[in-house]
Each structure stands twice: as structure tokens, then as C-alpha cells.
Length: 371
Image 1 (cartoon, rainbow, N blue to C red):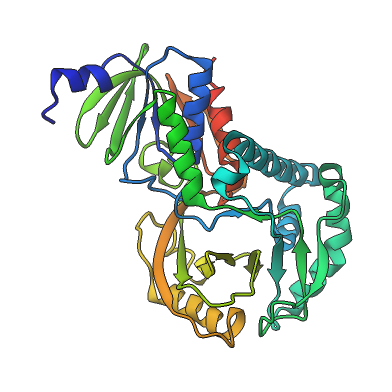
Image 2 (image 1 turned 180 degrees about the horizontal axis):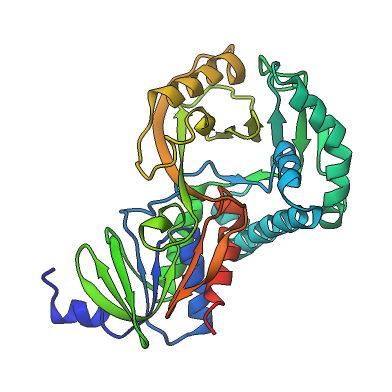
């Protein structure tokens, strides 16, 4: 690129700490690095015009796990491990809220609901049989029962008469959240360069040489926070998982409030600005959705529209306003990867679809890997 002396001197010379990815993890890591190293020159590189992964493309659920999810987790993890997963999510949400303030992220604790399809009798019975056990497991964290049964007061169709209710679940405006994080980062004299794709990291004994699609430079330390895109840059066990989403136009007298999950969490929806935001359907084509391609498919979008018509808004006229997709990072376990991966290179990736809940704590943990 045709850099001037001033541009190269100000942005790409004597860079101490470079963060790759400007999502929740990357921005939070940069903030904590600034607190730890007040005089360091910190640079963030972002491949998109806006954060490219899931941080500005998610549904804005401030959640820690539905009843079916926690029951399923118990089949693959010990009770202590499940409790630790929930605690990590709760702690991460508290860190996010305390860092930015509830008003800045439009946090609303309207409760979370899990719906059960009429056809899913076995799952329905399993949840009610396991509810007391899960509540007892979570009692050390919440000091009160988390899950209870509630009648179908929102008049959904083709679901069981009762659904699971969790009063501790909330929702946020992810656009406001990311705007607040970006503003805080800039106020801390941390530079951000957008539309920059990092192509290769070349560490040696003293520093890391970074090759991008526009320029090359060297930095003392690198922190990779690219989550679902991590495998494009580092060799860690992270697979991309695309989540497709749509949102309706405003609906007059919308009576639905809260965050909702359906069919083992493969579908999720919420109210926002008198609209319904609905996402999911990855289970319809799991291998096809293991992609970093930002696109929508007819298979999944048709299913989302069908759910709106038959289950969520069966007697309401609505129009689809917008569709999009985001890329999550998943793996064989739900434990994130936060570690040093080479000379002067660290990573905080594989958030397992829980970026809103744990992104802040993973970012902080990533920053504290540097001794």
C-alpha cells in the first residue's frame, strides 16, 4: 500500500501488542491489555468493515443454557463440569454488564422460555423428570430454583401446553453493545484497522511477523480472537458453524416478550423493536452449515418462515424485513481454547455459540496469558 511516513510511523511501527479480531473477545482483550500495559502500542486488525464473525450478528441472548441443553451437557460432562460451564457464562455476563453498564447494552431480563414440539413427547417428559435435579445442581449459583413449568401464555401453536421458564435469562442489543465496546477501546488509545485479512503469522525468537492482504509488519505479541475463523490462521480444533437469522418488520401490538428456544435449542427467537428475530435450523444440514460463507439457504430460510407461520405467529400477519448469517466457532467439547500456541502467539477461540455470555471473560483471560 502507498503508506506515508506518518501512516507507517503511527500505525505499523514499534507495535507492541496486536489483536486479531474485533469481536467481543478481541475488544475485551485489548481493554485488559491496556489496563495491564498502559504505555504499550496496541493495534487491532479486523477483516470486515464491522466485526466479521458473530459478535454483531448473533441474536442477543444473555443466556447460560436451556433445560434441555444442560441435561444434554450432563451426558457428556460431570456435574461439576456442567456447573463450571454455567458459572463461567454467568460470570462472563456479569463482567460484560459491569464493564459497559446495562443501559449501554439495553439489557432486559425478560426471562427465557423453552418450547417443546407436540411431536417430542420423550424430550418433554425427560425435561420434567430432570428439572428438580438440574435446579438442585444450580442452587449454589442462583440460590433459588432456575427452571419451572409455565402455561402457553403467548398462544404459540403446535407445541406442548407447558414450557420451561427461566426468570434469570435476559437479552441485549448487540449493536449497542459493540458500539459501546468500540468507543471504549478508541478512548483507550487503541488503534483499529478494518478490512485487513491476516494471511500468515511468522513468529521467531523475538517477535511475530504478520503478513496481511495489504501490508506486512512486525509486533512483539499476537492475540488471535477470530473464533469461527480460527482454523484459517492457527491449527486448533475449531470448526465454523453458520447460524442463519431473519427478522420481521414491526408488528402492531406484539405480545411476545423474552428469549425462546425450540427443538433442543436448534431454533431460537426473541422480541426486539416490536419485531420477532428468529434464527437456527443448523440441524437441517449440519455439514453444509460448517462453513465461513456468509449466505442463506432456501432449506433453512423456508423452515424459519414456516415456524413463524405455524408456531410463533400463527394468527398474525407479518413480513420479513431482513435476513443474515453469522459464524460461530464450535468443537468436540464446549470448553473454549485459551492458551499460548507458539512463540509470542496466544489465542482465545471456540466459544461454542455462547459468545455474548463468555466473550468478555475469555477476552480477559486471553489478556492475562501474557505474563
